[in-house]
Image (cartoon, rainbow over all chains, first blue to last red; front, side):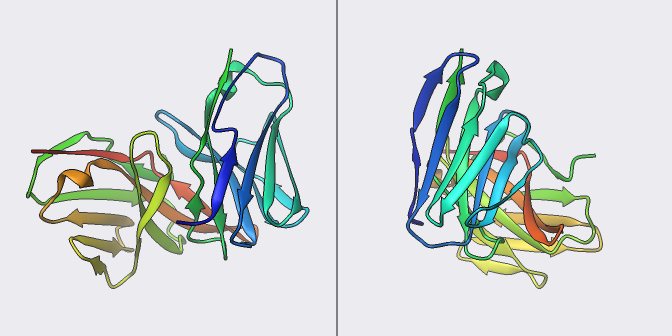
Length: 111
Length: 112
């Protein structure tokens, strides 16, 4: 299995609070991704990174920001959590932006 | 039209049977294709890549038809452990970076 972890694995937070999710890899892969998965929508890309300090938006980036200050860590921040951001969040890594390997996911509930 | 479309199922299939899923994609310039498997409350895992000539991995066979823009997955001699959701995934180049687009998945249950 790819060396990829996510923390926390579960979180319940209140509307309006900031939340940061962490993705950590030990594979030294260049590409890292954040997705959310909701029933009926499949996996949707939030943001991705193609190197340290190099990030770009995905299709559902509103309300989210990311940072990558080290190769191994990719942080996803919900600036002010809303109930519509209740979801399962997956981080993925890739050596060359095609085959991707996923972390175990974070279940986030915004009340 | 969705970029990647799959029949959501569920497919309920007896153990030992053969089952096939199809997936269609809208972008004729799509470059590479994959099947992922996702167990309940787990992360997606790469099952196999799909090559133009078709490819086989044990009981699993993947086919690509570029002219009709569809991808198929065939599972022979199905096992209880094959019960999962199967995600069709297409890789496109967007602004110089490659981007994966996921189907919503086809749910398969193998019945003893």
